[in-house]
Image 1 (cartoon, rainbow, N blue to C red):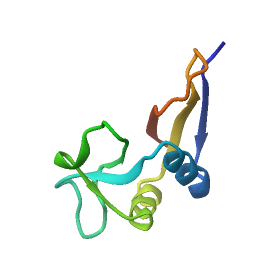
Image 2: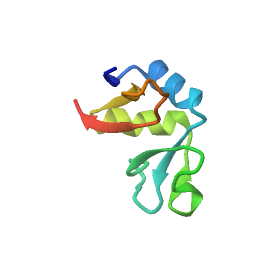
Image 3: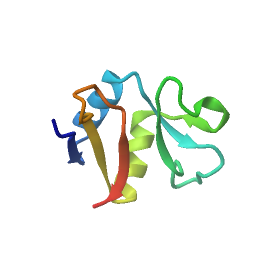
Image 4: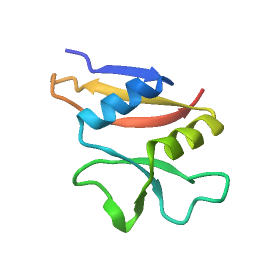
Length: 92
């Protein structure tokens, strides 16, 4: 079985996938400015956590996502068929 990946810019699709995997919108601490949340991440349980990440609102996350002209590449299923939390932010 091949892994299943998707690329999207749809905010509802991104938010739905993240929340289905218990993730929260976040940014890397001390990378933001008045105009930007900084380096975007998704904080999943067991990930880097609040030591390195700062949770932010979806509105703030998506504003930076759009301003940075990003797309969200995510793996829906691993090759084994298991659920996956792999994602990557890529340029459009």
